Length: 231
Image (cartoon, rainbow, N blue to C red; front, side):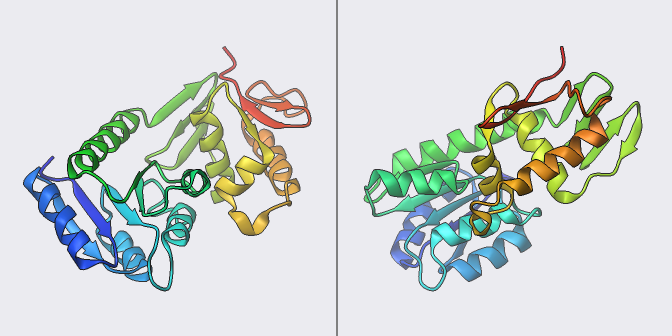
């Protein structure tokens, strides 16, 4: 735990100090930011293991910070807990859809915040253990950002790799075109689902033995795609 660094992002100093004190008391290293722009700079520089992100921030709000983090490959995997004064269900759903891992509503119990922090970090650690996935004659190493087919490296574009990673991590689940579009390309691409189809086609040509009869990346007609291990 001593090596785990947490970034607190809140424009209210007394809230930052309260959270900082309690997390440090639990053995975490803590860094703080008072606005969204500073938060992104610190996230890229310090690479924390977790970000506690307030929604209501001056300039760039927490939703935009979350969106920017998920688009930046260098920090896209850092887990985020959204902190909000809003209790509306739609606000919570929006945060989760943008890529937040959890949320907590103000006013919150410090004990609950620490418990959620520990839970998210624990979950992230268990996911990091499995970074190499193998299926048939293809393997993908998420840490090395490498895909091999028949032991030879396949060159994927960044978006192809991200698309492949999302499908593999959700093996057996149907991923809608809209979900994949939002997850990988962001909200500015809303409605451009053809972008997903084009990248799927290119990806199949590189990883499938027969891209016309794919074994791994299955089309779910009218909905989207599903990854199967081919077993």
